[in-house]
Length: 208
Image (tube, one colour):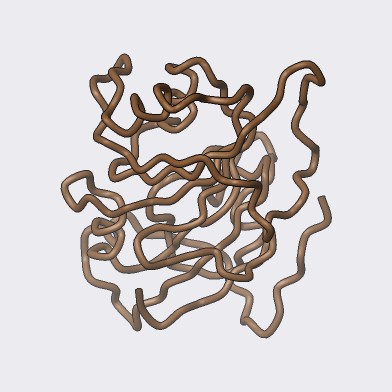
């Protein structure tokens, strides 16, 4: 995929001190919103040479608030503010995260109700989630490469709002009710949204 060039920013090599996760930022608070493309790791380094955040975000001293799997797309928030990072990611904060999810098959109301009330996964029951059937978002970009669809099986789009953040949680939840996730895009974390960011683009914001 062609990388979108970054403009009007000073380029620095990334270096995220471990202490930054628990302390107030040493300098001005920085908040970066990034639209992570498919097949990009949600970290700044990778010994295997795969695409990472450093291929798109040439800033130092910011780190990701939570993860977004390599095979998922959409919003990541990066910051040097440990308090904000905790607000966005700690389960006790119950910060809502909105995902648009394409699943294989067409879930009925009973299946959606199960997700709304919570399902029991291997690591325990999930919190109740907001789940509704929606049409494919008009703002959605084509994925590169496209998903593998089977002509004989229809697909459906769901809007899912979670208030926790377990590993691959959305995918495990839809698989639990029998509708595997084909594509997953995170649209919002709390008040932060993708807005008009294209895949690979980022911008700094003054606050959330």
